[in-house]
View 1: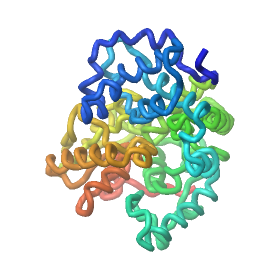
View 2: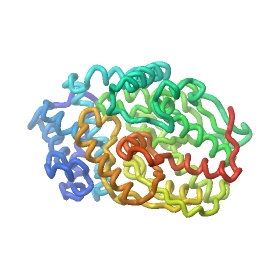
View 3: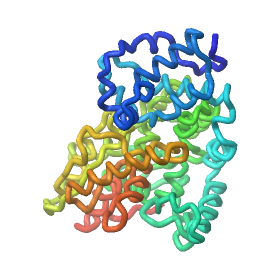
View 4: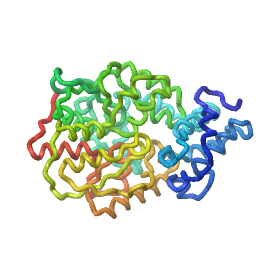
Length: 409
């Protein structure tokens, strides 16, 4: 067998692809290049060829599989329900093992170590901020509601690594803090906690959480991803719902069963699911209309990874705003985790297209329920636009009407 790890794609999954081509129009890389090898069915054909021993895991195979954004739009379009996300992750794990140089040492260290340790992540953030102030790393955009700069450097008091908020007698929900989300986007966590407490929940952030493992899995570092999943399974043990406010993290947690970890995926809910339901049952109010347009963008791992599209719009509407769709059925924004490091031109082209689609709406406020998408939009939209999570928009509207008291631990 050409595979050397236990993560290789299952033959039955590969055979499920009937090469119908319905994935082609929704695949960003195929749309940009017109190259069959840059399409989902083309990549599956290459992976099947390795499985059959026709070709080897070599540099060409690495190039074919790494060019994929792993947006999973093809899964939504596929009538045969081919689990493409699992297939490409398995193929990338083989590449990482058989061609170790395909994952640069610095990235391997960052994914396997920096993302696991909040203190180390904050230190790296400080170094990044210093380099940006010196004019280096200009490709890295301002992240989070605040700039990653010395005056706004994420410190422990701003993060929500652990703790509890609200009345302990109320129903419990666990908030997944993650890694980069907590260090760079802690304001999203704060808004999520405030709204959940306002909805009558007791919010806990269990100690000893770590990165969800998505970046590791997408880089082919399957063993690291599985180790992170096991750590989180211990931290999040219990029966309470697990609420996630980053779409990429939520999609990965919902797939923990792939790492032989049961009980987590079934309990995981995206924050937009949870809050939209709370609004529908009357736990949270619908606010008067302001006629203010808000452009809603669908992150790939929310729309395709979790099949959630209505809920973010429900939240924005409940905040009193008018929903304007950004590029319905459009392509990935090009963020795709660490994709920009390997394919900056492709990621940049997609980022420009998505930014142009936002501008076409005429809205100046943009709702995007994924941290990576927020980074990408801020980078290519530039000044004059306010990019926030839908729950942040709803929390701000509640606060403006005097219906929200900021929760304190």
